[in-house]
Image 1 (cartoon, rainbow, N blue to C red):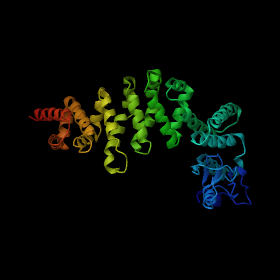
Image 2 (cartoon, rainbow, N blue to C red):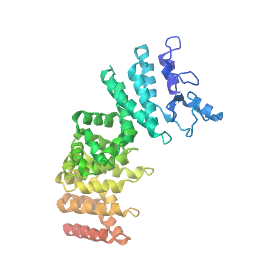
Image 3 (tube, helix red, strand yellow):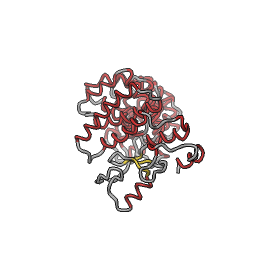
Image 4 (cartoon, rainbow, N blue to C red):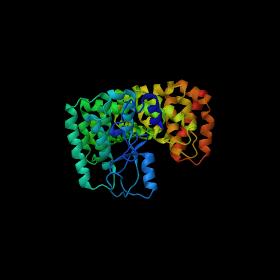
Length: 383
C-alpha cells in the first residue's frame, strides 16, 4: 500500500519502466512490502504468503525446500524503491552499488540462519571481503554507502568471536570510530542494539580497556547513548547497559556527566510511571547514578535537576524493588550531606513519610540502617 501510493504520485507505467530488481518474481509487479526468505530471495509479502497458503514449502525461484519458512523485511530494498520513486530515471538501481547492497542483504540472511551449513557461511564472508575491495573503486553515493556500511556491520557482528575480545581493538582507528558514530546517529534499532553490545563487550576485559576509554570519552558517542535513554525506546535497555559498562571505568565518568548522563537517567526514571508496559530498568539506571556520585559535577547536576530530588524521593519506598529503595536512600544521603537545599527540597516532597514507610516494611538490614542515618540527618538539620 505504501509504495502503491507513491506510485500514484510519482509515476505511471507509461512514464517509467519498473526495474527488474524492484519486481516481485511471483507477481512481476512493483514490490510493496519486500521480504526475504532464508534462501536470500526476495518476494512481495502478499505474494509469498499466497504461495505458502497454497501448500508450497519451497522457494519459488530456487525451488529449494524450506525447513524454516519465516521471512525478514528487506528494508534496504524498501529504501531503494523509495529513492527510485522519488528520483525516477535519474536513479539507476542496476548499478554495482545497488547490486552490492542487495547482495549483502541476502548474505546477512545467510549468516543469521541456523539452517545454513558452515561452508555456506564461509562463502558469504568471502563475498563480503570482495565487496569491500570493489566498493573502494566504485562511485557509490552517500545513501548507498550508508546502507552498505550498515549491512556489512550487521554481518560482522554476527560472526565476531567476542570471546577473543582483543579483536575489538580494530575499532580504535579514527575513521572506524567515525563510522560507529554515524551508525549510532542514523542506524536502525537493530544496529544501535548491536553497537551497545559492542561497547558492553569492550568494557568486559583488560584487553580492550583502552578502547573503552576512547569510546567513553567520545562526546558525540556518549551524547547519542544519552539520547536513546531519554527516548525510552526499544534500544534503551541496551543503551543503559552500554552506559553502565562505560561508567565502570573512572576515566569515562566526567564525559558521561558532561554529556547529560545524569539528566538522561532522571528523565528516564521519572517517565517510568507513565510507561508501565516498558521493562523496568530503574535498578540499572540507579546503579549508574551511584557510580557517578563520586564526582562533584554529578552531584551538582543531580541536585540542580528540576526533578532530581523528587524522583529520588519517589524511589525510596518501592515495595517490589528493594534494590531501588536502597540506591535512592544512598543517593539522598550523599546529597543531603553536601547540599542544604537538598534537605529542604526532600522534606518538601515527602521524604519523611517515605522513609517511615520503608522502615516499617520488610526491607533488608542495610537499607534500614541507611534509612535511619538519613532520617537522623534530616531531623538534625531541621532543628
